[in-house]
Length: 245
Image (cartoon, rainbow, N blue to C red):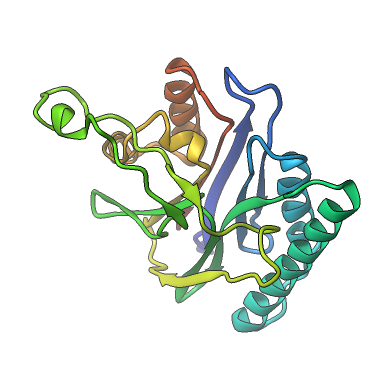
């Protein structure tokens, strides 16, 4: 009897890093739901850890309906409910903002659905190439030394999620989640990460790790080993999903 190939394998991890006093990130790995999430509470604001934790708790409580479209609707409704809750909690505590970014991935046999708010990212790796699927909801800050470094033969500097966020869960009365569809083919891999990864590693370095073709746990270990060795200035969180065996 031939065994059915697993639909996916995945692994996630979050660490406080080397500088921050506490971890404001949270991750969710729910292979039973075909759902993966990274949330990054806004550093420097009150209760960023509460915001990210509430997102993964709320999404982790979901049951998946038969239709993927219905599942996306349920996810978006849940995020909107968290958005309302965080704004209410901020008012009750007398603080300006309690908020978090989120990046998430949903599996379907024919395609993957990627959603995000803020600058946490989702990447897709296929045929030796790593591509960022999400677009940061942030005003980018120009690096005055970029041209000097571009003339250097050394590895280009990591690129932070950088700049001022223009969107986050808990930031505005109305929540807007961006969605896109990605390939669902055996061997395709996805990386979800908070900007703590991008502050320490370039996209080219991340691509090289995927090219080495490690398992999701080993890829995560390599990402964290590099980020922590370079100082891990922010909380570090990542999830790797590999489709098929």
